Length: 201
Length: 201
Image (cartoon, rainbow over all chains, first blue to last red; front, side, top):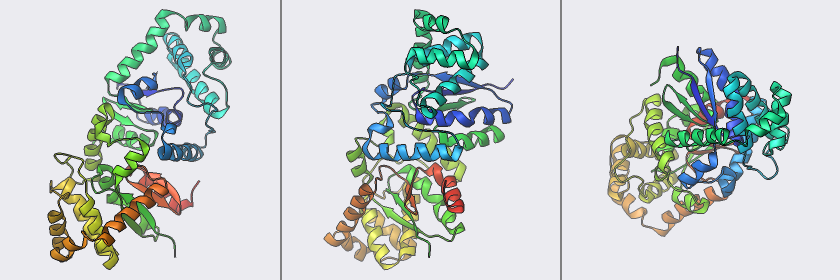
């Protein structure tokens, strides 16, 4: 069985949100599945000496323009949340807790969190809102989830995912690996499609 | 007559080189021409607080991998010159001097300079080599060119082009404007093609 495509992202990354839209369909076209792996993008910025895109004067302005333009092209809702970017540890921890129970449901939850943050202006950086979304979308137990994301075991899972991402050279989001081949950016889905079709170049 | 596509680049930018390959063909497909505008990318980095890609630890490693991969995809030669990145003021000044005489020949010269630097390992950061390339490619007079790029008038042209780029929000290379719409990156040519075909989204 062919390996999963590994998809690294942060729940506060606009390009991660945009890059999440098409990746499962591209993978499915080639009989692959996608392993969604949220990590703490801020840790990568710190290691690299970079910042969130919107912190740069000209690159920030362009990025905001391009986020919205890309969303229109993909026909998905988008607006930059007030106070962006937020720390989304609760959402990522909940993801790994849910994934251990059911990877497909965890992915549905992840899609819903992204849409809530960038499409609906919901405060996905608050644990209570994360629990609401998990309950609404996949019927998770709010109380159980809120307790789980406070445990050292679940916190550790996100740390491990983040260390793993940095060790593999991930420095931004979305970041994909296709049979070990790295692709950075939501605008590389066409190339991933070609790579899967041809075996690379 | 439809406006030219404006193409901002630096003669030491690997993605500028890669993004230069297809832009004229995309433009021609839609009855457009491309106005090639070298500028000093280092000035943009300074304004933005950024650095050349290869200076970042993980992003640098990925970029070097992706430069070579993209070159293979486009079937053009590529290797990162020893001592990269170099200041390519002489090449850019010579371009503007040549452009005032013949824009088409200046573009041929620019293509040759890019190929010499990234494809043939030639020292295009040296004025003598720049003069050689202009002589070989478009029959420019070496002596005249070497004298011209030392004049305040020609130096001023590159400064103006750089100020103009920064004023328009250019922060990287390649950077294209299509009827005022900005596109950053060599991997956006497909989108530029779509934009020209549809009038945008």
